[in-house]
Image (cartoon, rainbow, N blue to C red; front, side, top):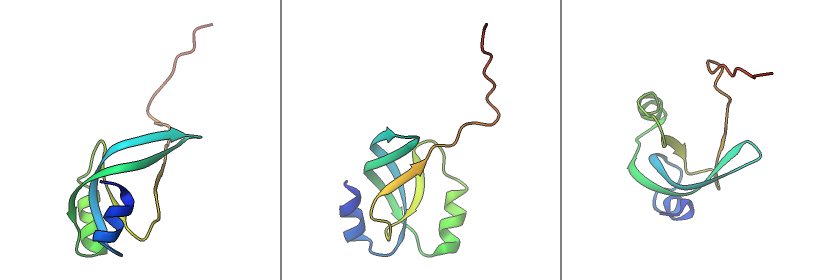
Length: 83
């Protein structure tokens, strides 16, 4: 489902979704298509559900015109550069 369709179905609501189609540009992930898992009741419910999310599943508010997620480097990942 397109994010614009989700916004129409669930105006001004938190929703739990899974990214179906996305692209990465300039260190940001732009999610174009999602699968809605469920709408959430309020901010408290959104925080609780967010803590249980993993992988491509996340919580987002439909007030946002698009889904843009900044990609953070993993601080625990060590890269050994061979010289």
